[in-house]
Length: 216
Length: 101
Image 1 (cartoon, rainbow over the protein chains, first blue to last red):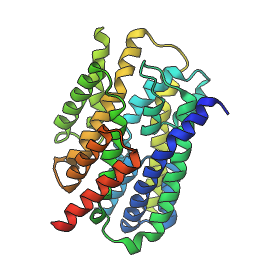
Image 2: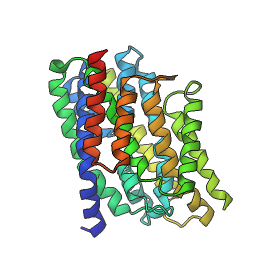
Image 3: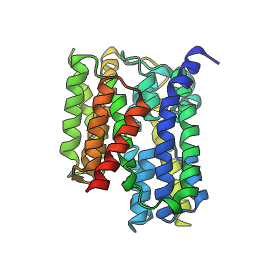
């Protein structure tokens, strides 16, 4: 086990606790949307992408049907395309290994593994995802079986977890003035697109703000 | 049955999206200019995620109790308080405001 893998494991622990809470609220919502506990748990095990699971479940719960549900979930994942391209040059192995390593990209691990110079520590990336996967799965189990008892989750303010989670990750990225400027540009682009595109697309398109990097 | 299809298809699309970048672009060094763009992607994508998850509901812009909860947590994050404390504070503030309204 490499040193940075172990550092990743440790760095992932606080995020895994938050993932546990988020997954618990996902489990509850999924049950209320008509999932069986086994379905909710399997979804967390094989999809492991919080925003996509929430988006797809919300559409199914609202009677939106299969195709819109899959589309909404997939679009929420669109950002992983940009994140995957970003880590790609830091993955030196063959295409199959790279494809598997790419599966470990989740937002916190990707941000933690970022060295800030355009390269990523792939061992740290993979290490950080391990505790988060455990937290995500176990939280779903608890939520799925407690679902009927809990009732309306918004009452507990659990919907504040996601934005806070991303805000903490963002805070670590704002050390340089240039990063702050492009972050602001990305935020403005994303918000401006919200009324006109399906959810998920604004975040991907906001990525064009990073093209400022070509200028110097 | 529909739900199983949803779960299966979403698992496949997620895996494909995550594999795409590493398979197509990986395994070689990119030109320096591309690396500079990549270095700016984390702040851009995370900022976009923060504002869309804080200020929107579906395709609408909206503010509610959770916006206030996230704002309070933002102060704690800025003061470098632990993540879990910030998250629990966001949850508590949001829940308290909703209980009062």
